[in-house]
Image 1 (cartoon, rainbow, N blue to C red):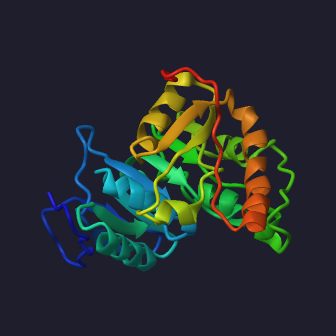
Image 2: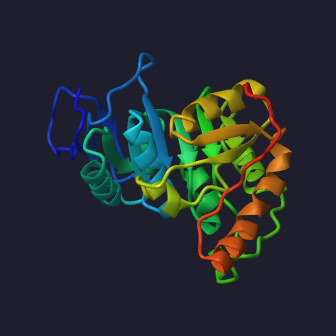
Length: 264
C-alpha cells in the first residue's frame, strides 16, 4: 500500500495493478490507491481537475478516502493528483484517464461541464459496469455554451442526472448530488463546512451509499430529496447560488432546517 503520497504511474512492467488505458493501447501501471475488499478503489472523480472535483478530492482525501482523479488527458490527472498530495500529505491519490479511473472505482463522481456531459458518459460506457454507483454533480449551466452562469439550460431528459441515467450501461446506478456546494469552499481546508447536500435518486439504498461517501467530508450533511426526476429542481439551485454568492461576495450553501437527527 502506498499512502501519504502521490505515486506517479510508471511506464514499464510491474507486479502492481495494471490498467489498460484508451483506444491507442497505451498501458499505464498504477497502485497509488489501494483497492478495497471488492478489488475496487474507493472513488474516482471524473472532472477532478475542475474546481468542484478538485475541492471534493481534497476533502475526501483528508478524510482518508482513496481518490483517483480522472481526466481526458491522463497526464493532467496525474498532475492534479500530485497537487492534491502536496496539500494533503496524509491522503492517497492517483491520476489516470477517465476510462481507467472509472473502471477501477466502486463509486464514480461526475463533475464535468455540461457541454462535455453526454460525450464523457458515452466514452465511459465500456469502463462502467453493473453495480457501480455514479454520483452526478453536473449542472446544465448556460455558461457551458457561452451564456450566463446564473441561467440553466433545458435538458430533454429533464436534468443532467436523468440524461446520465439514460446513457450509462444497464445496472449502473445514478444518483444526483453536490450541486449546491462551492468548489472554492471545498478547496479551502481551513474553512469549516456546515451545509447540506441535496441527494436525488430512484433507490433509497443508492442515495444512502452516496451519502455515506459524501459525508466523509466533515461538515456535509446529505438530505434525501426524492427520486432522480427531482434533480431538475436541485440542479437549478446552482445558478441561484451563483447569483447570491456573486452579490454578497461569499460562498454560501444550502441548509435545510427542522429535520430529524437521523436522516438515513
